[in-house]
Image (cartoon, rainbow, N blue to C red; front, side, top):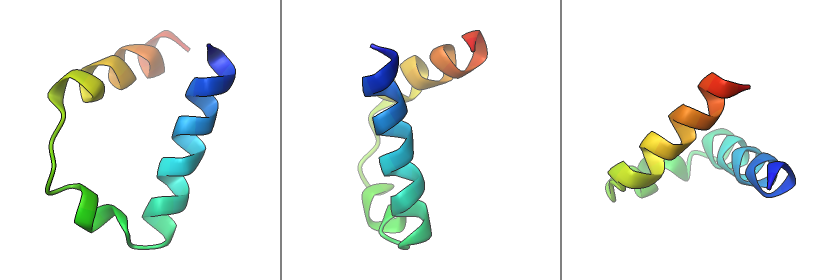
Length: 43
């Protein structure tokens, strides 16, 4: 599970660097955001 989560975070960081993140931020997914925050706070 950690490997999948790490890959997800790395992909998001790449999107931030590529400026693609602005397009994706138009679509909010509160459930995913809360899960990510919980995982980050645990590690």
